[in-house]
Amino acid sequence: MERHEVAARSGLAVRLPEGRRLRIITPKGQQAADFFAYRADQVGEWLSPTHTWVTTRSVRPRQGDTFLSRFRRPMADFVEDGAGGVHDMMIAACDQGRYEQFGHRAAHANCSDNLRNAMQRLGHPIEVIPQPVNFFTNTAVEANGALVSPPNPVKPGAYVELLARMDLICVVSSCPFDLQVPGWTINAAGGPSELLIELR
Ligand SMILES: [Zn+2]
Image 1 (cartoon, rainbow, N blue to C red):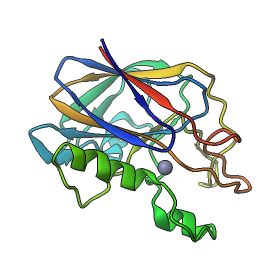
Image 2: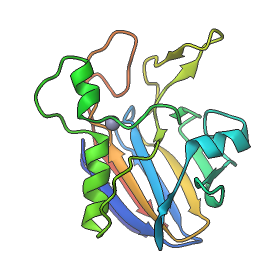
Image 3: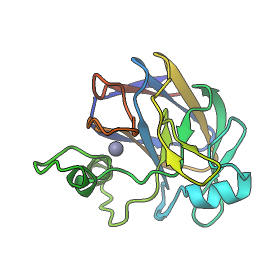
Image 4: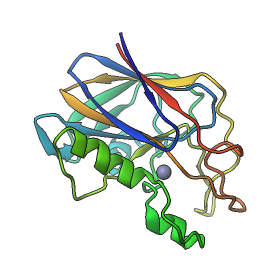
């Protein structure tokens, strides 16, 4: 087994061959993990939540679901959910502009830059930021359609495990969101924390 730490607020890309499993763990709990996956030999094909949920008919990924690419091919099976179903597929990856929306003017670490940098380190400059799967992120859609993000209940040591259905490059970002926004809770009040990823 191969294990890597994704430091708080940073990102990491790893290669995951077909048939191998990737486990993502939040050791301290309550840490959003933005997850992206690309076909290893053709990075123009990436995991697409919108193509996934129209097939699974659930805006939340569930154990047993299969994540599809934007070309509707199976990329990864969600084989084990050790986080009680607290996951999101609707929130765009954070970027500098997201922090500026809340009045933060200085440069702020963000998941979009983490993705770009992680892919660049593997020799793949990317121009498009795909919609991520946000593991350990608590969102809900209310009856009137409102999107809400109540306090994050994910416990320390919670994890998810995925099985690669093709050779993948997987990117995990420890979301740096640390602003106090009424009614919108992403990470623990104490701020972002590290994630662990295990290749099994
Ligand atoms: Zn983020």
